[in-house]
Image (tube, rainbow, N blue to C red; front, side, top):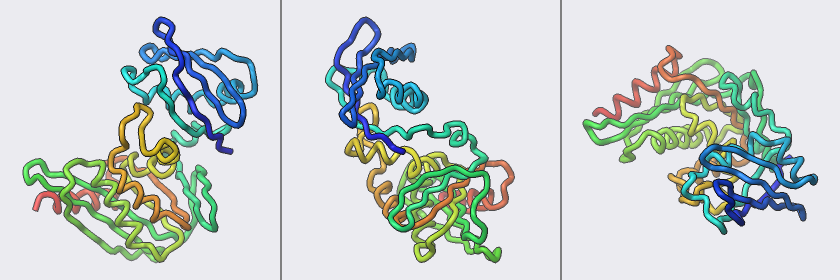
Length: 257
């Protein structure tokens, strides 16, 4: 179950910042040193216990915020998933699954996925020499048939190019309710399954108060996931994974033309 919360920095004592956390008519206080990453729970109540039980998620938010952005008055909406299996999410061999069918919005982790899904292999590349980008989308049908798609782009960094590849993959399979994205990009894998919930609550600002990069792409990516079941499988780059290697080669070819 997701709990919608808000934190506000209310005071500084030496190197620690006193932070109030509120939600569902509850209030708790924590103290955090952004340089030494030391965290202390101050109150003894239900919300404090909830934060303790989900300390890893709380720390991720606190750690992502740059030390120089800890200022009195800073406020941040955020979401914590109760009893989230953090070890399972961090195991890159697992599939992360976004199920938005029938009005749902469920995120789960499993070792194996559904059978008979179309697989979407994506990769992107940017050529410093040519000053252009390219990406490839390889579709593999449940029967084992491959369709190669390659594209050029004016984007000049790897993250938006990788994101464009995933977007194109969902566009090309938009008539299919279930699909699997196979990628070597954590940006593509975690964006829809972890980060975007907090970004949207915080008006597309990061924990440091800066604008999220590539917002328009993220909005398209999320829209394409509506009423669909999508499995995300991570593969390590340059690990001799056949389809990922081919997507990488074709992406580099498009960027280098």
